[in-house]
Length: 171
Length: 419
Ligand code: SF4
Image (tube, rainbow over all chains, first blue to last red; front, top):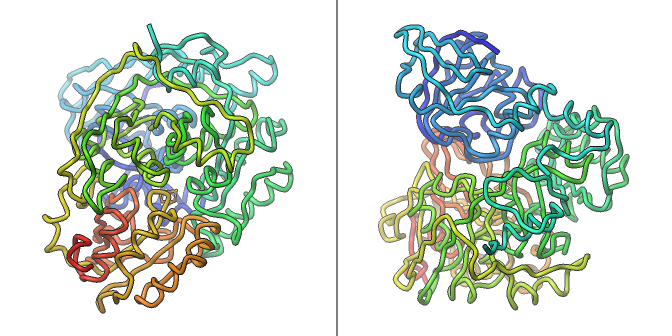
C-alpha cells in the first residue's frame, strides 16, 4: 500500500459534519457524497482533489457522528490516505472497516505543509515528505486491524468467520 | 485488582472472568441499533454476508432522522429500512406515528436494560449508559457484521471517573453538568475512554437528567458514558424492562485512568458557544447573543422532564416576535404525555411550533434549518459548523429552560430573567 500525492492540510477536531454535511446524507452513493466532501471547511476541495492525494490533519480527526458516509466520501473523492495527529474512535473503526488507510503520526503532521508532495507506505507506516525529503514513522497498525485489512475489509473478514464458525480474533 | 462497572459488563459479555483496559475482546451484544441514515449502508453490507440476522428481537431499526420523509431520496432510504425489517421479521421496527428518536425510544420501551451491551450505528448510542449498560456508537459496516454474528469486537476502554458534589442551583441540571464537564476536559478529553458519572449530585438526578449526561459523553470523545444503577434506575426500569436485567457495580479497588471531582454548588446554567461543545460559558456571558430560532428537543433534551421545564418558563409568556421556537417531543409517548399534562397547550399559546418526534433540525435535516447569518439556541448536543443549516449559521447549546427563556427574550437569557 504505497501512495503519492499532494497534501491537503486541515486543523484539529475536523468533525464528520464538516467531512460530509448531514444535508447530503439522504443518499449512500459514494460519488454523490464525494462531491460534497469537506465542503464546509474548503468548498474547492472536492473539485480540486486528485486521486492519490493525502489528507493531513490535526488531532481528533473524524469526531462527531458515527456516519460511515464520512470515510466513504473521503475515499470516493480519491483520497488515498489520511494522516492525523489522532483520530476519533468511531471514525477509526469505520475507516478500517471500509478500507481507507489511516495513520496516526503527530511528527508528520508538523512536518508536512499544505500542498507538499507526500509518499506514504501504509504497510510499513512510513510517511515521506517528498518536498522536503524528510521521512516520518507512524504508529504501527494494531495486528487485529491488519487482519481485517488483509481479509479485504470487515465484511469479508466476517464472511470467513461465518464460514469457519470462529469468533473474532480478540476473544 | 478490581474492575470498573464498564469492565465488568464487558467481561460478562466476553465470557471472561476479567478484562483489562487496552485488551481486544469479542463480546456478545444484547441490542444492535440502526436508523434511516446508517441502516441502509449496513443493510447493503449485511446482504453480502448472506446469513439471517442473529436474532430478530435484538436488531432494532428506528427511522428517526429524516422522517417523516423529508424528500424523495429520504423516502427511499426509509423504504430500504422498512423492507429489510419486514423481510427479516424484526420485532422492533418503529414506524412514523409510533416511533421516537432512537435514544429516547429504546430506554422508554424497555428494549435496553441495565447490564446490557448495546451497539448502535449512531454516535449517541452512548445515551443508554445512563441505565448502567455499556452502550456505544459504531459504524454501518460494524452494524452489518454485528447483525450477522450477534457479537462485535471492542478494545476495553480505560475509565475516567467524574464525581459531582454539592447542591445544584435552580434551573441547573444534567445538561449543565455535562456541558461544564466537556468545557473542562475538552472535545477529546475522554477519547477512547469510558466516562463514569457518580457522586451525590448524580444520585439526586432523575433518569431524564442522567440520559442527557450519558448522551453527550461522545462529545468528549468517549467510547461510552455510564452511570452506576441505583434505586432511581430500578424504579425507571422495573415497569418497562422486556428482559431480565442485572445491576452491576464497580469494585471499590477498581482502577481509574483519572478521577475528577467537581463541586457544582455554584454552577450556573451553561451555554456552549459556536462551534464546539467544549466552548462553554455561564449563561450570563451569553446575554448579548440575539437569536432567530430556539429548538427544544433531540436525544439530549427531548424527554418529558425537559418539556416540563420549558413549560414552566413559557407558561403565560409569548415567544419573542423575532424568534421561531420549535419544540420536538422525543417520542410518541412523550408527545402524548405532554398533551395530557397540558404542556402542548402552553407551548401553542406561547406561539411555538410543535412537531411530531424527529431528529429534524438537530442535524440540519429538516424542520427548522438556519439561513446564513442566523443564530439558534438549541437543547441539542452539537454546534459544529453547518450542523443546523448554512455553514455561516450558529448554534448555541443550552438546557431546555434556558432555550425557552431565550425564545421569550429574543436573546440568550437565564430563566430568572423572564419568569
Ligand atoms: S436527535 Fe440529533 S444527535 Fe440525537 S440521534 Fe437525532 S440527529 Fe443524532
